[in-house]
Structure formats: C-alpha cells, structure tokens
Amino acid sequence: MDLNSILSQLETNNEDEITRLLHQYNGENSRTFTFDPKEEDLRSRLCQGLLTVLGRQVGSCCQSTCLETLRILSRDKRVLGPVGTREGMLVLAELARLQGGEEGGDSMQEEAQTEEEERVVVEALKCLCNVVFNSAAAQQVGADVQLARGLCARLHAARAGHHEVGLFSLRLLFLLSALRPDVRGGLQRELHAVGLLTEVLERTLDVRWVGPYEAAPPGPQALPIPAEDNERAMEALKALFNLTLSDTSDEDGDHQLRLITAIMRHQLMLKTQTEDKTEEAHSHAINLLSNLPVSCLDVLIDMPVQGGQEEYSGKNMDAVQVLLDFMEKRIDKGANYKEGLTPVLSLLTEGSRYHREIRRYIKTQVLPPLKEVKVRPEIGSTVRNKLVRLMTHVDMGVKQSAAEFLFVLCKESVDHLLKYTGYGNAAGLLVARGLLAGGRGETLYSDDEDSDTEEYKSAKPFINPITGHVEEPMPNPIEDMTEEQKEYEAQKLVNMFDKLSRQQLIRPMGVRRDGTLAPLEEALRQPTADSCSSDSD
Image (tube, rainbow, N blue to C red):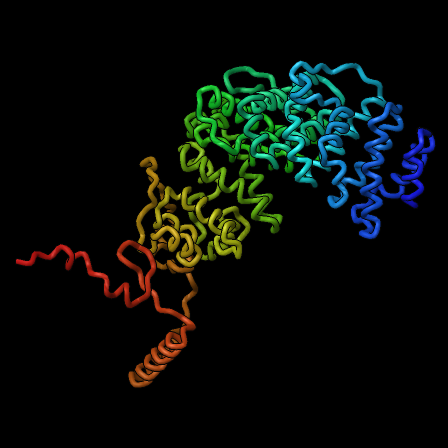
C-alpha cells in the first residue's frame, strides 16, 4: 500500500478515512517483520504522523487502529526515532493509562472501561513493549518518566482486570527490569516489586496457604491452569527472575524468598492445558529457583508426606521428582542443552550438595546400586547412562554440569564416581578439580555408607577402571612373539611417541603430587614426600 497516501490523509481530521486506510495497511502487514529499506524514511515519518494523530482528541476506534499500525512499524528498530522521544513515550504511556511517577502513579485506580477503551490500552502496551525492546533511547526515557512506577500501580490495582492488560503490563515490567539495571534496582528497593509480583503469582495460581510456606496441594482431580492464567504467571516469573538476580540478605528478604520457593513448589505440582506449556512453565520456575539462596530449597521438601518416604526423614520428595522428570525430558530432547538443561542440573546439584535428604533421594533415582557391570556406563537408557554420555559432550558447560551433578551425588568421592562412570568419562572433571590422583572434593558430607550389590562385589576385580565395565577377554597380541620381536615392537612404539613429541603433535604429561597435570619433565622433577621430609643429619 502507498505510504504517501496514508501520510497525506493523516494531515486531515477525517477520522473515518484515516481508520479505513490504516486498517487496510494493518491487514496487509500484520505478519510483516522485514521491511523495505528504501521506505525507511517514509515509515519514520508515518510514526511521527501517527503520534500526532494520537495526541489529538480522536475516538477509541481510531486510536486503537493507529496504535496497531505503530506496533507493526515498531518491529523495525531503524524507524523508532520519533517514538523513542520523551513526547512519543508520554503519548503511549497516557494511552496505556500509565501515569508513572510524575503524575502520582501510586494512587492509580483501575476505572471501568469499555471494550474499545481496553483495546486501546492493550495496543498501547504492546507498542511500548516493542519500542522499549528495540530502542535504547526509549529505554532511557522509560526510566526517566518512571514507567515502572505506573506499572506497579497498575498491578496493585488490577485484582481481576482484563487478561491482556495484565499480561502486557507484566511483559513491559520484565523488559524494563531486564534492560535497565537502574530500573531493576528501583523496583527492588523503592517499589517493593518482589513482594508485588509474589502477590500476583499467588492470585494467578490460586495459592491457598495451609501453613508457613505450605500451600494446599492440588487434588488428583484438579483441573489444569487456565491458559490465560498460565501466560500471566510466566511473565511474572520472568520479571521475578530479573529482580532476584542480586542478593537479598535481610530478614524480610529471606522470608520473601522462602515464600517464592513455596509458590514455585506449588507451580511444579500443577498442570497446564498442554504438556509443552507445562514444561515451559516448569522451566521458568526452575530458572527462578536457581536464583534463590540454596538454604531456601528445604521449602521444596518440607511438606507432609503420605507414608513410604520415612527413609528421607519424612520429607516430601514430590517436587524433587518433578525436577528429575523435567531433567530427563530435556536430556531426551537432544538439543539446546545449554539453555534448556544446565539450569535444572545446576539446581539439582546445589540442592544435593547442601540438603542431605535431597541428595539421598536423587541418588536412589539416578545412581542406584550397581548390578549390571558388563555394559559400558554410557550405553543404555537409564538416567545414569544419559548423564554419563553428557560427561563427554562437546559443550564445555554441559559436560561440566553433568559431571559435577554426578560427583556431588557421589559425595565428591573420586572412587565412588569412577565406580559409576569409569575413569575415561570422568577425566575432564578430575583434571579440572585437580583430583587425578584420587581423593575427595572440599564439601563435607554425612557419613552414611554406600552398599555394593553382590553382583558388583563379585565382578569388581575384573572391571576395567578406564571404561567402567567388565570387558570380554581379548586375545593377547604378543602372546606368540619371541622376545626379540617384543623388544623390536616396543622400540618402534617409543620411536613413534618420540617423533610425535618432537613435532609437538602430542605432549607427554604426568600427574603432580597435588593431582593436577603437568608436562612429564616437570612432574618427574617434583620432589617426593620422602625427599622433602628427609633429615640432613
């Protein structure tokens, strides 16, 4: 559609014709995300013209249509100059009914609105989301005019407001808190947004408290969360994630974080309309839990249990099992491990490191007593097999997360880890930790003993420590050689290693006394304990 004709019409006061032309343009470009660079100047002028119309007293229908056009144009960050100004942002903020700090946003009340007026508010919020996301200038103006204060006032007042108004208010709050550290600090300290968003989650997820940090569990016949409630909850979780990135160490902050942990436990036990949406909601909950102090994670298991788990000091492991199921689903997907898998691995690792009952339960699920030792630990379909395979993944972060998780389940004992993984799979972790010579990590664990099965005890002498399994007997390649032939082959092998070393294709390494790797010459030169402690007399 010709943009010049639209620009000409915007200069008139004919609302009906402006609405008609813009409605046609919106229909043609509703799914357009890549624009013609040649029309960049025209689109920038169109943004300015739309703001001029919106600044006049026009009807709600014309306003919502103009805002829809502006939302489409705001997908192109190169034309946002007129919108990212103070005047442009204030026009959008007024249409979104966000008074901000300058106009007493704390006393804002939600007034009754017609359907058309609500559509104007929603479209203005959508525009603000796009503009703030795509324009650094708009982000600065948003901070200056205190959009966050108006959003918090909106969330305080909107107890049962329009779904999309709440949804895009939360999304805009998320964007501002993600892109502007100064706004994030103000939300935490002055606007008490952590508590506000916690209340939003309580209302949205219909949390009913039956004790300190204990929400009434959903019954077996509980209905899934309505799709709209789930959407708002996920936006609130994303905003809370930003606000909990920094430490909150005071007493009130600790109470608030434990309250959030209890709500996250409640959400982990809920279902949504589809499995994919449930997994997405759980992913946001896990990301938020990863921000919280590990001391808060006991809230996940401090729930009454209906028998069968007395061995875990009466702790309820339902939420931990949900996390384990989530982890296995993400492993089975086989892609996007860094963003999709490492957060839950990190959460389970830290929970196991500092909470004995969590570690004991997870170990029974992931590393049960060994019985099958004839198959390599990375081969198979158990959770252990899948995690051991990840220990040699090409992504360094993924392999380290998987290895650290298994190491903690083994109470950071090298011997126990090698029993389940084999030396070859664990070598990367042992090098990084300086534990090639064996030993333990630095964390202290309880003294509960691991018991070996009879199958493992009988097979232990025959297990190859490198591969971690009992290998089939292999024919001895030098069995029929004479001593002269053996000596010749040995010398040949030495010469090959020497050649590779001289060409710097390989570098012979040794293990220092502290368990770390070093060039072989350096490792051999290191004095032994006996020579260090010898008496000169």
